[in-house]
Length: 370
Ligand code: T4K
Image (cartoon, rainbow, N blue to C red; front, top):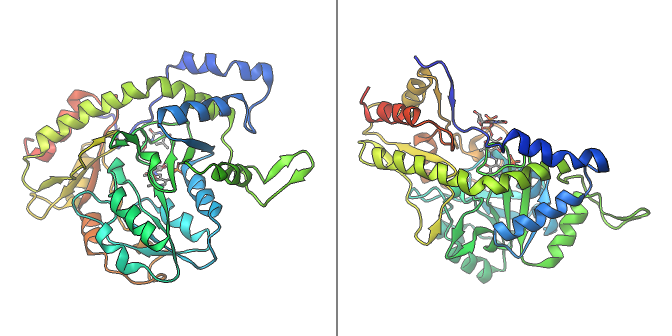
């Protein structure tokens, strides 16, 4: 058996010397945080790369979500319609803002929120919709915006998986009132830990700035209550270095993604998600659905791969609404499709350096060729 573990992903890093050279100036300036030179540079560079009107950098994707929700100043106890088929951060961010998540079912075709089920969940307490572009699959942004406009709701996208995705020729961060990205080590693009919020209303820039920096606006002036969610200079420099290589990284992912898709799309009992047209994808993950007619269950396949030193992940099982901290706490809604996906999902290893022979080994196991 191959002894090297193949994990679900592997952090993409710039060449060692490149990063070391890039951080050298920090030893001259001794300025390593609090919106320094590189923080400003990265904010500008990412505004361009993501093709968004404005952007605010944050210490991580989760705090970016929390701060964004907080920036809208929703009344305590208000309801936010969201998806349970996501990483726990999405739901935590709502609840930690003293708001009530209302879980909406998702579409089996792509795992994103089912826009046809949103309206029935709206009450006089609803203030926002918080969908997730899960795996970089683009939500039905047009339909969601239409509903939001009809009921005067805010739309905050969790775009943690959608770095670099474009839809209809526009960066994905242009949709909704705000879109939140994660630059965690496990993502297509990383700043070690990091995140950002994209938006078009300039007032959000100031609100987020205050929220991420204690509301400080001068040595003797604190204008509002805030936390500390700033990105430091080592992370910002990592971001600047990684940005130079991210297109190559996405190309590397694409090549591997396409090989998986080509070889697995005909496999009995394995289904792939559909993707919307007009999308430039980032190939962030390779999720498969293990259906009843596959020769083993999802959990048996998960175990079988682990025995081969291959470590896929069940992103996202269980649903966040079924996690111990949330179970039976919020309004009961029908989540049949989401539950089915959570039972069938398996995310296979995908990263730019994943070797062809390893990729082939994974494909062979799934295809029953070994
Ligand atoms: N919204 C959504 C929809 C999200 O998916 C996430 C994060 C967020 C919001 C919040 O964003 P952040 O606050 O995280 O910026 C991982 C990530 O920690 C998390 O960022 C990510 N979603 C989630 C889907 O996956 P775990 O618990 O699976 O991570 P872990 O430590 O098991 O790592 C997974 C694999 O990644 C490892 O097997 C190997 C590789 N890895 C991991 C680390 C930490 C590396 O190669 N290098 C590393 O440094 O949560």
